[in-house]
Image (cartoon, rainbow, N blue to C red):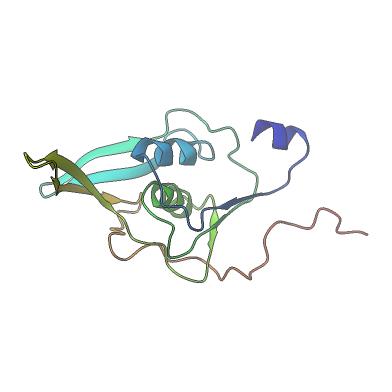
Length: 156
């Protein structure tokens, strides 16, 4: 990111299409790269209400350059945490032709004696605007065919 900025990048496009996510913390950390200090990234909510919240603790590496995130129906989990944080903060414009997957739950897996396991849902994620994305996904702001980055050569 810093290398691209030093080289004169005037826009970032992050393609999260077909990205099934990964570790929860990776989604939080990736969003933090583009947010100012003190911005919420995600809430963890259980049956009793908000259990935990994650907020940026320092300014990210780039909080100003135009940012576009591409999503599709296979963008899930940690990718949705990043997308939700950047969309709700107004930091990024989300482009896609469908909602994201909608994997907004936290599960623990307990092993059973026969080697199998049982998954138990213990909480869910909410975006900074307290939107529950589970089974709903994140709605793009505009279709994938929408214009992105500003023209670097407008006077040619």
